[in-house]
Image (cartoon, rainbow, N blue to C red):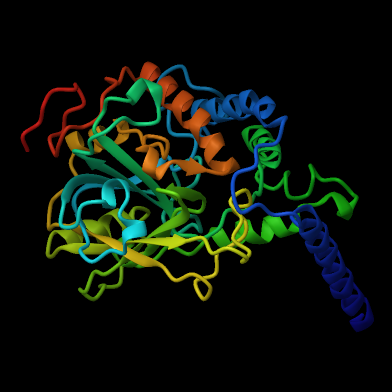
Length: 385
């Protein structure tokens, strides 16, 4: 019996090793800058179609809805949208003084949406990725997305993991297709193939690392951009690291919405804050743009502070603000040229986020406009608040 168990364990380790070696072989060639495969655009229609199917899917019934909800295809459950102030740091080195970071001491008003990463809402105690989407307002200059070139907002989209678990657009198309068909593990085991050489074991390990136990508080967490962005002529990644000083009271994890409840309690008593950071790419190091499964090591390139995000004491959990939060859309391509998203994962986002937003706005009869200030108004009217 012991010999059988030992052999089973040995076989499992061999299979994991096969998957890891296969994965390493697939990512051996890396690129320090953008490289667009010739066939990449052919995958976008399928990815968009899968995203729309995820929006339409109602897990409670197992079939497409004839009425709302038309949730986001990912990060469907919000913990709330909060008001924030983003203060650009003084003394930033010249190469980092680009885009919204160009003017020391400048202050932007912002909205921040916190979320769970899953395609469907679930209780916060379930392992998941957690998102932090930031929308700065009062940002002058043309934006990259043609439908929103004249808007005065800038988006940054982050999650609490430094790496993604799929390396390129072709693999992402396979993953989203299988996921939209209702299988969460099908991609990793090549749709239950008996051939372990076709499994995506490394991807599964990275995905499991992304699915984390929920923190006690989102106001004490660190979030990352996953993918790379331009900062002027540099390639960088971004992060928001909590600097909230107040000790966390242990949450009631039996509450299915304890992350919202905890943030509501904390912001009802005191302010929160984050340091907004950038990590520059270093030549000659393994810091690829086209493979978001590779972490840029902080030992080789430390993060540099460029701003402080202050989240003032506030009340945010009410029907009107929650509806406003649901209507907001965040897209890393809603951006100045100085912060242009780069890499395959971001090229996917440009098409998918835009089409998903259009679809949801149509189905939910949302007004297409960006917020002008802290007013709960998406009509496009000037907001003095």
